[in-house]
Length: 226
Image 1: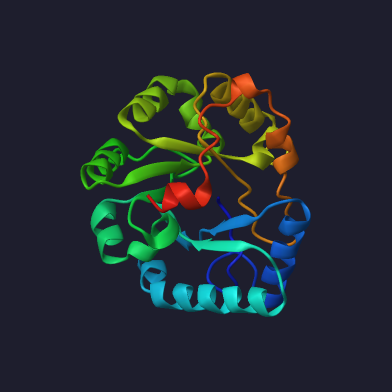
Image 2: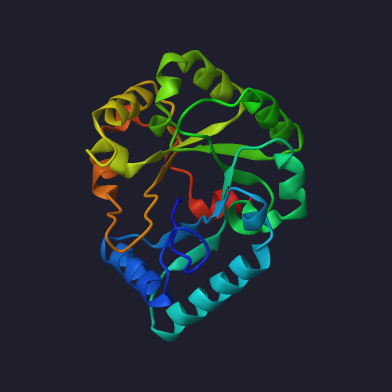
């Protein structure tokens, strides 16, 4: 549910041909639905929502023309910032599925902004459901698991990168990923692929014991259509 496959809109593929190859690679591995989540990190990103929509429509058209059987869902990976709820209200295409409910929220990798809890609370109050992107990569959270548990209790969801279960991001990230899984704090998997060189790694997710995973049976289309 977390990919950077749309061409020419962020640090993902530069060409539509690479985007097609990435989708074909995922389909060959058994993936049927791709949630496309380009970055929204600054004002320049927020100003190109129409360009993202056009790239999405074009990619869907090319997939149909080439007979690629894959469902593409548009969304965004939005960097946490003050006033985020208002930005989403003005730009609903940045929510998962463009339906205004679930929103993939990225935290900084270095430290937790002081306004994080306030922004998340305001999102919930505005009836958005925040999905925290790859929290296991934010190593400062390892010493603040009580906060993560509080988020989940409040209705916030967590998305883990499949690559965090191998050495893609290092041993420290892998350790925190295992801890979050063991504590039942993972709700979604995502690959976070940015190029044809990246692996989807869903074999790692499928290999996890059932009792280490909670709430992973949500169907993408059904969930984001709610």
